[in-house]
Image (spheres, one colour):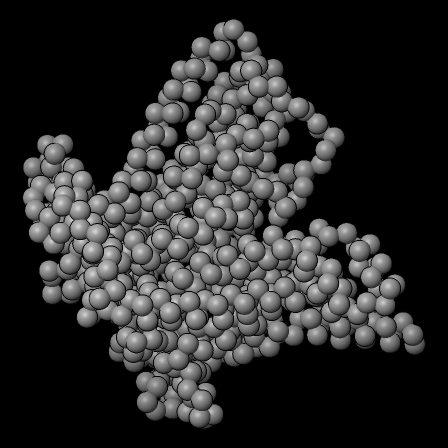
Length: 296
Length: 327
């Protein structure tokens, strides 16, 4: 009896400490998720109560060319920005991990851009990419390119411009990689050296396997973040020119708040959620082949 | 050669506690080449060549990282004519300091009010999330009870949830609340700070990791002395966790300061805008943006984040390395 009593007390005590999160989880996550799922099956303009329409919103989206356009754009951006971004960040982290002078200054400078608020970074790069007066085209011109691209005003160059800009903000990823690199036991390198390993060998057989969980972590974070890219294109291009930089979350936002098609917006949110889940599961599954966990 | 004090016996502290410092190669930071430099005479020269190459690449990368800042600051000090002159110079001449005053005097923008709005939201949200996350983290880290691990797993999985999934229905919910309780939510700051008082998964996770490293004997001793559970939390755990709480507060502040989508969805009138939302008012959709003013305003928006970083560099880096989030 005493034992049951004390277990119940422990439970109540635990719940008391968890209560802020439990209440918040219910009110700001669970209820909105349930509502969102329900709305995604409804016609809902906010002005009238939601009207159940079954799969109508999903069917509408499947036949909506703009929906497929934004999916394509988001995928293209992810494929261009993610792998190169991860590689660049990893390379930078490896250089920053070398025992050479000035590292504290190098590390700080490379990290600084990721502190810049997204909206401010968007304004800055809008100006850098300015077709005539921006620093980038002025520099290209000085280097002898007579006809530099119009960047954000050119449907072919707007997307590459945003990808280019994304490299500026990889400081966070670099720091996470750096932390991972510092966990690699020194003895492993020493052992590799005794075996006559080259620099390439040491990176390929020691560094990469050891930090593969960090690569995996950064990959997942990157996927989720990329699928939600919003502020930068919203401020810099409004999705143009010719919808070439119209991304998934922008169309979702427009559906919900510009066209007041809340049902459609919620259906898009659920599709996005499913895509995130599938891609993350896929990354987790494939990681079994290449991620090495210590002691596993 | 540097003489490393090798002490393989000393255990590595868990990542939540370890300082990953930007401050140069400390005893733990040299992994890459130190084996090479031990290889003696022949290795030495290769080392120097590699060193030079590394410096060269890092210098190039750093230049590319810093140039946009230079261009922004330079533009922010130019006259309107100088921003449209071709070719533009990197050095502003004449230097026009009053651009920074003009940002505050601009009739399209109310920079002072936006700063106040941002600070009000930030103070409320940061206080709320730090406090509530700490209480919840204590429950997860220091108490044993049925269902704890399941709830913890559920909490972790909410971090995967994309904001758009709840964004639209939260909007409908806040609207409904306003219509049915007589207390408006939309068009007020409430949607941006009230949820913060119910803990956030990232912060709870971070603090839980930290609280778990504090020896349990401390709690046991206090319990024997008749201290209540909340007393243990408040008088023992919180004072011992100031660095971790600072990380959470810092990231929460940066998050609020940077958040764009939240204010865009939930704030409606320009006099409620936060700074990052207000920046757009310096932009002219019809062309003819005053770049010198927009850049001056951007510098002002960036400055607090940079200042905080330089004041609390170690805290910052530790937090990012531990959680992998950008604030």
